[in-house]
Image 1 (tube, rainbow, N blue to C red):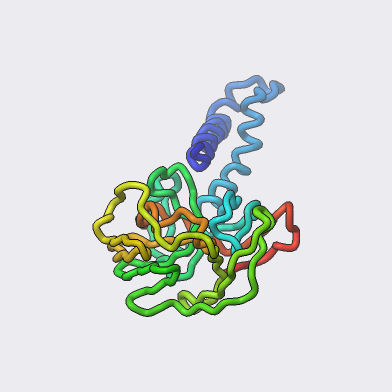
Image 2 (cartoon, rainbow, N blue to C red):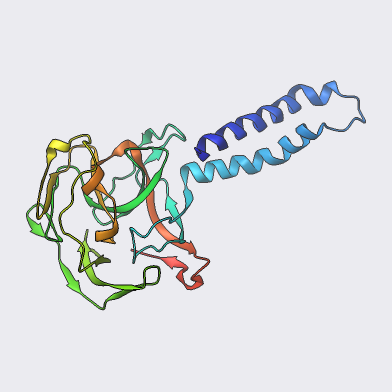
Length: 262
């Protein structure tokens, strides 16, 4: 369900009743008559819905992490906040940008509408920005001919699968974050189907190399061998961008995860 559209419709309906009550309905009732229940509820909920709509559309929006593709940065069940104005102010529902305020940078954790089904929200890390040459071969990431620095650290134990993965600290966009690699997983990937600008990519047994087209981004999960991302379904267009994830505010399974992340 498109919750933004649902919220907009609810706002319009309650706002219409509120306006009718102020302009006409109140004066057409007998002096001692009570408001109909639908008028009373609409007037009560209208300001609440308006505040939620404005906050969610232009400031911050909550999301819940549904998959393990961003482990260890984000875990299944994390509730996060997404900054809606970092990358520009966009019209609700239509998602078209009306005010330019910034652009996604390498290393950002970004929420976006899945290119193959825009009704779904995905979250991945920005690896390539427009014009970048992104290569991922033999599980090593290279951008514009320069290998992205990584250093191995202690192994990561997945509580879901009860198995270890190799953990690395990767430096991207001037900041460090953790990634996971599985010993037994293949390094090669293949596209699920043809996608826009697929000709910009070259696949072989060792991996792939892609040139990011204008107005698009190359996304990857931090759980590199357990993530369906731009390596599989292609680039994310700017019009699909939702916002920048910046804060973990709740995880019912791990209450200590409250706080920021990279």
